[in-house]
Image 1 (cartoon, one colour):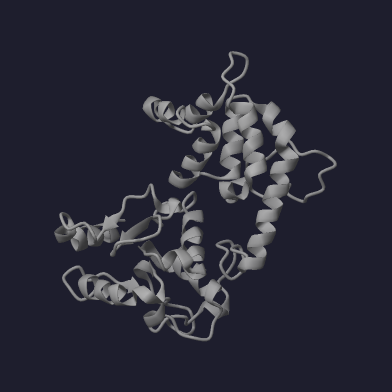
Image 2 (tube, one colour; image 1 turned 90 degrees about the vertical axis):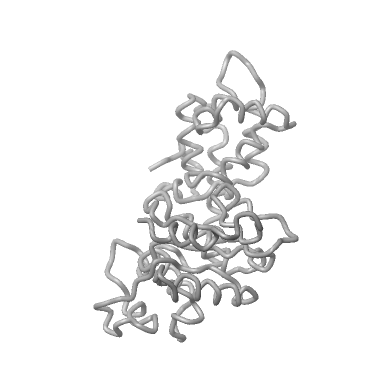
Length: 297
């Protein structure tokens, strides 16, 4: 468990929190600016941002590219949090320890802890806790999660499982219906979890979603569109699935773009291989590629 050199007077109650469970987005601009003040200067005395980039796995040409930005440390952190499943506060702390920049951790520990506490409080207000007993893998399933889909055993003895959970917003339902026709009603014979079709009404949305993504579905397809970017449900589903990656890498996300977007593609998915239905040159292979990706273990 990654931990900071806690100060005795912090009193922020984070000693039992695994920092690897807190995404890097929890760190606000003030912390990032402080990190930049420590890491941007190129000196022979202490490792700088280039050493941190190497520890993160960046290659020479990638690091050279960051040199062209006014604040290379900030750009590095932004890029890392978009492309790496391990882009967490704990991951950053571990890297800073590896490059022997404990001075940064000592000086910024309180600010980092305050950021983490604010993030956790905000998440608690926005959504039910992810490690609620109903979805935590260390305890028995709640009766609430028995019989949640149309083909579930009401007693919970034989739950229904799927090849993929489909993350989508209501405006994209027609494409989801086409996906059902192409992947379920053909020789591929895949089984998709489509919330509006497969989930029974009357249970907490967040608990059901967490259960389905973590335990009932091997993969997750994210139908990305302009409306997806405005959907709180899709945002929760995507971030929850990404949070499972360190401990359950088989929960691989597959982003799908089926129409031209006016808004910028979400950075959180930008570095995951895209299945692009809008590309005329590769459209003929679209369904086969997607089916194979969902069929692979």
